[in-house]
Amino acid sequence: MKKYVMFINFLLFLIVITACNSNSDDNQDNHNSDQNNNTALKVVIDPGHGGKDVGAKGASGQYEKDFTLSVSKKVEKLLEQESEIQVFMTRKDDSFISQESRYRPKYANNLNADLFISIHGNTFSNPNVSGTETFYYHNHSRIFAQIMQKNVVQATGFSNRGIKKENLFVVKDTKMPAALIEVGYLTNPQDESKMWTDDFHDRVAASIVEGIKEYQVKV
Image: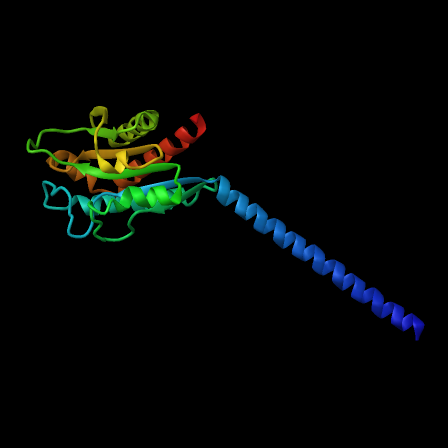
């Protein structure tokens, strides 16, 4: 009888030890997960315009809002594959976002994001105007804008119009390094025909991701 009781107690002891180890592993996993979330680079991708705010109307009659969303979704998909980066989108569908609300910079600031990228297609009355350019506002965004411009212009193959400091609220009101990328001129018929292809979207999205990673290493 004593041997039976001792055997039962031994089994209970093993069960308790196993449970403790399991909880310890679970807690460690949760801790590691929390650490990864805390150390990951938070990147906000902002597809320009949306809803009734169609943005530029291209030479073919297509709207900027659809171009920006398509490219942004590809950027999001690529960034989701990066373990050290967390990606957030200001919109994931054809939603209208009021400029007066200042939602876009507020969204990024409330997240305490590390980087903000607004994606756009350009427009001009002269259909011959072409090129890729990037806007920033704060001095701490200048290097980021330079890196993004360098990478994106390589992907587009358009003329390099450089970076410019501009009083645009999405790059002015954001607290983190921020860049607004004008990928190309939708009003240029030759450029626009390239800008609506999947291959072009893939190249631009990949270049934006490379720019983010390059900046991440440099800072």
